[in-house]
Amino acid sequence: RTCDQLRCTACDFRVSYFNDYIWDQSCDYLFFRNNMPELSKLRAKMIKKKGARAYACQCSWRSIDELTDLQTNQQLRWVCGKH
Image 1: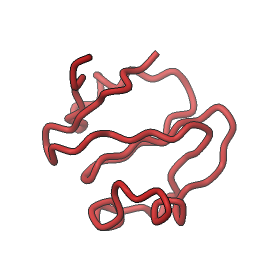
Image 2 (image 1 turned 135 degrees about the vertical axis):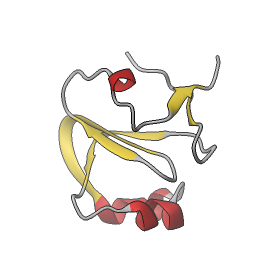
Image 3 (image 1 turned 135 degrees about the horizontal axis):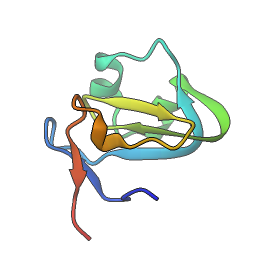
Image 4 (image 1 turned 180 degrees about the horizontal axis):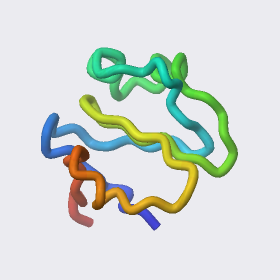
């Protein structure tokens, strides 16, 4: 399970997620800074992968394809945006 209301405390952006996709390795900070949250622009660097999930805000991104505790990654500043 994952929170569907994640928010980044670094860029104050809502964290978007995309089921069955991962991010291309060529993704960088400027790509997300310039293209979030426009899905039509983000698709250029999305790769279809069944069972994976791609997460991103304006300053951070992750591709997850197995159970992962995001709280253990100290670089991420994603918190629950409250329900």
